[in-house]
Image (cartoon, rainbow, N blue to C red; front, side):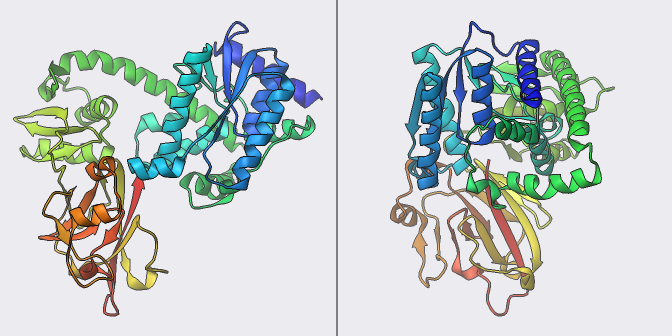
Length: 451
């Protein structure tokens, strides 16, 4: 009982100290049925806040998804609070938009949460993330090279979204659930190392905790300091941007010469391009190299913007509908961005490849058949390739029609090109001419991950 009172007291104190919500607010709890969200529901009820419960059934785990839904509804009814449930055709949405499962599910649920708030007068959306989630996010972003902003973990308050469990950790939440006999469900996908977050959670974090028993406490302090540093940088950058960026409609010009010479120029450029336009660190590094070498004309892409070096300035504008978004892939390229996805390039001997069948989002290519540099671009009418396993050429437009690819997906379809040949219809099909054979010695393995 002492542990339960402690967690409840800390919960109320954290909510009040961080001004997440009050007893006058109407809080929408997002409850999956897992231990974190079920404990959040119990604490919110025990503290006497006004709330309702929203449950998303993404229909991805069959009977498990149905049982999650039934548990959350039963507990919400027992507490006498409003219960909202929605079943999403997540697989159909992925096929329609070309998004990953995580991206599609995220977009669907947040759009629905907003609808519930607007329709039923909820002022706050509460999510059951805790400090372990923030630490995992730190390492995921560090591995992806997102810069300082990505190392600040998960914030406890963004707009209407609040995270009132950020003061505690996974173990204390689980202990509270057991002590108070709070029912919860275990998501079997949490044990799969298919997902990067699970690899960090199951593999990396326990190893670091073994090395440093106070790992969670130390990481909490690190993330707090990094967050404060980022807040300082963000505030300072607002002043710098006023002197550096010129706006003329959709055309934005970064006047590099206006950056104070005592400041780290490339870092300032990175902060501007990443925060304002969504450019990734690798792309900014390449752009700065072009700036240093006084090269002009090369185009650099984020998801929605294109940047060009022009006489010492950086000109940024929205990507035009007819832009090929072509980027050069050198032999030493580690990763490259293709619309809404990132490609990771790995070179190795063929003996290191366990299986040639690794799914559509992985390409295994005979390196010695390639002519570098490669080119990555949007597909266009007239493109053709020889689909893996076939002997005849096929128009890419016909291939996409046969696969019933939606217009939205077509607009985001990229191809990897060697000389005049299409090597890979990214995320879909390898060209048969570049497949691994008995004579292959070295391979290029490309992994596509949706952003």
